[in-house]
Image (cartoon, rainbow, N blue to C red):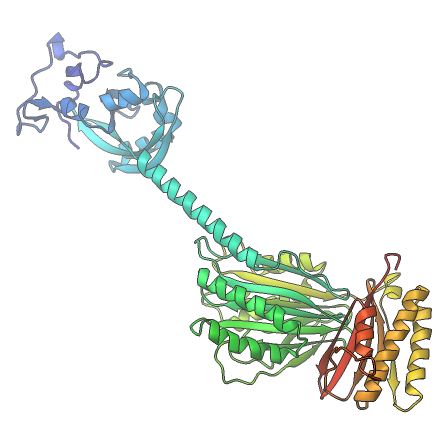
Length: 543
């Protein structure tokens, strides 16, 4: 910008800058009259440049020389910061620019001759008449052969406040969405007797869309535990709604104590009814401490990882069917060993999937991280997230479920015991089962009342199996720190049901007796075509 011959006229308009005294030309003569339009660009319709700038609503200041001596400020600038003293270096004459850190920028503009802009600086010095946000543009100028800088400050307070309100609204909307997502997840995980479990959910991205990642832990009775993790693809309330319906359905199907592949088969049909356009994956697994294994079925989900007590990590890759809702696929169950001292991890793809990287590479990174992760399930969750680089800026939802099957030592060994007896049938089976139960429960130092109830339950279940079941038959007793479990298995897959026995009936009372005296009871089909009937007794606090 060329302001030739303007420096002598800058103070010429006292009404535009009362703080700048009238300057005099050389020899004390008054400054010459501003030239008309077209002579040197300093006048417009008889107005000098200060006259024009004085009417501009933006804040304007002009400085000269390498020390940025103040030459001019317009009324808008004086209204905000008060009158300024001309002729002084900007550090003294324009302290607000120094506080805003603009002097180094003005140095750059003066030396380079190129304009620079600083956006949305907050102006709130003690001397300011009002607070706000201004965008400052520093432009080089020339006047009487001397370089200078014109500072142009536009008030952007309304824009900044609008942006702040929009960000606040987006943040509140996101917080609401995350709250909705978390409310659909378990508020507190069930803690089985034989497993230690922990889970974490990390929402992805910064937008207000919720995801469809979910997990659950469901105690099934007889010491068995169902563990489930799933992912409804996409984001938004629709994905969360489908997720909530699937999670509720899993809990209902789990109560039927079905094999994993049958639960997945039911979910497959339900997903197609809920929304055939939504793709969802899921793993449903059941841990049986008596068998020392984790049986599972997968619908398009990533493999379960299991670390053995010796630190070797195995992948449960097969079997794996298509995602839920596709239909026409017969799902099957798989099985992987889960011995005492083992740790298993179920997770969604947000933990291992990265742009430009093969998914198997992410799973392999997780496998290496799990091999070196130690501590409680909560600690392992945190370590896996850190190892895989999941932060608050991660762009995808992440759900992780960690379970440990502890290897009991010390005093806890006495609290977790197993005993079993093979029953060959015949008239001696029932008394043999009663004697076995009596001896085992006595060795476990149960109170007499609980011992008698346990023997009665074992006797009734064995009698029921002898009458309605087929070999092979087995009586199994198990105790944990919280309950006594009695289970009888046989080779017949017809499940018993509780019914009302008439006064004259000689049979039909066994299951009713068990349901009356036990805390809980149930039955399920077992692999190979048999069944298991079980009941539980809660242990007294002293045990």
